[in-house]
Image 1: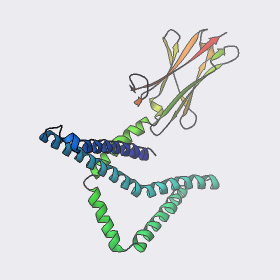
Image 2 (image 1 turned 60 degrees about the vertical axis):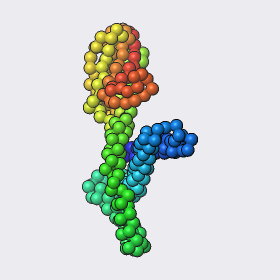
Image 3 (image 1 turned 90 degrees about the vertical axis):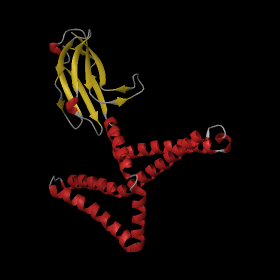
Length: 267
């Protein structure tokens, strides 16, 4: 999914550059605008804009041809994962044979369909001509197109995460609650539970202790703080998670997720 999102972001960027470049090129080459620029400057700018528009058009075209080619295999991969989960649930088994079966069925069906469509329904000469035309369009731009997708894929994958801190109860009595429960939930394609740190901090900012997180289910961890070890005051639980992300808060680009939840202890 992150790959498709990266392709979409890259396609939107190159399409925007194409529209912008082509619009400026049309404006400069129009009769009204060309008389306002020296010939050498107008010609150079016009060529640059025309080249940028043509290049970005080829990049978008190449990317979406790649998507069309990859999409059936991605669908087969998703079907394989869904089939494996269904077989494991229905049969109550974790055998590796189920994994093999779940791969063979969807990919075998895909290969059969491709064979029927491209080698029996279409003339061989037409297939060869289509392949040559495809390679002619792609070969000049595929490397840069692939590099741009990889760059956006890394950025999108890095941004695909969630981090949530929850503390319960927010007001604890030592006579009624033995523990303060700290829950950490992580999600997304690039979540890494090993990089999370949670600290107990007093109300005046002094570090009390680093909390040890215990995994529960995938993406969820928990830490327990005995109320008997705490005095009557307000405490903060601070989550730190080294991740690069962008939001609307200055300076917009951040290198760490930081969340704070408070609770109070009374007799």
